[in-house]
Length: 226
Image (tube, rainbow, N blue to C red; front, side, top):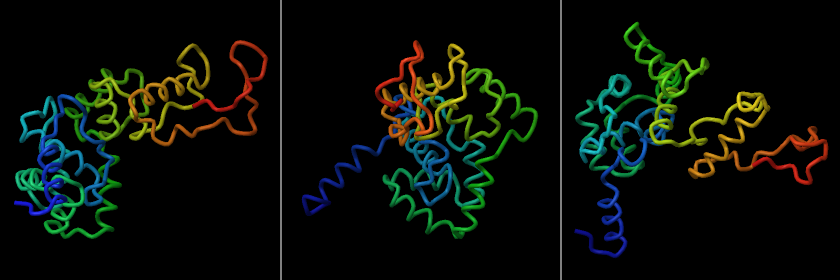
């Protein structure tokens, strides 16, 4: 039992946030590497805790990507689930992974590069990938890797736009009303509402481009689009 006020606060935080509710929100992006510098581990930790809390929703703990991660690290999904439950923050979880995994920083970097571009490996996976992409982002032909699809599926499932996970659409995207940049502005507006705008709140029109009104030839008095 804690013997100090700080110890009591720490214990209260640990107990309060032990459960992870994936009914209410999406897990972290597969690109999140705040646990041991390995892509997917932070997401896997959230799913492990949600599974223990019976709040996994439609997510799968120990899915094929999770299995690729545990094959690389050398520990089992069962062992990691217990560790994620007992080590509630990224620092402690990282310490556990570092003790259980002897992979070097260079090996972890190489693994991240490989798994980030992992695409469907066979016809069965291709069918699942294509059906999911058609549901969450119809018409997108630039999405070829599982990580990007997972991010899009999370956003579609929870009705969010998270620009901490990926950039907004291109300034040249004219799919909304035939107007360049409008789709990008919509993405940023949705992200602003979701508090996931990231660094795009500082985006500005380049100085070499004179700002203009889309309804007239009258220049705008201010240049920021964000």
